[in-house]
Image (tube, rainbow, N blue to C red; front, side, top):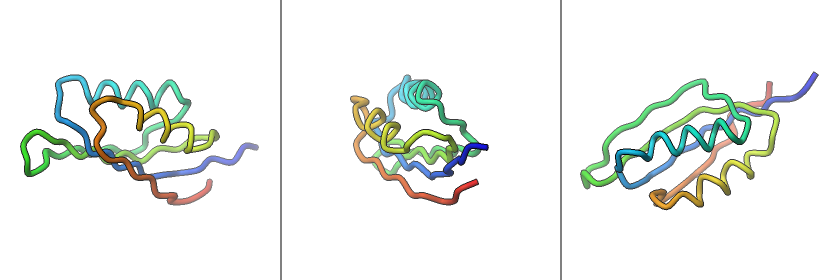
Length: 84
């Protein structure tokens, strides 16, 4: 049986038409599953805050590095929630 880690990823990004699609594609391609997702427009009207709870067997560092490479991402944080 493999061990799955659950993490909460908070992404602050420029609110472009394609940012949500790019984030979801990176998460899927890196082998993570989304269990919860929320997005809100930030006060500056040009930004969006996306909070995603993901689980997977791979290292969260791999996902962090790939999300951080996205052009529109301004700030990124990851918090370990639990191991299942």
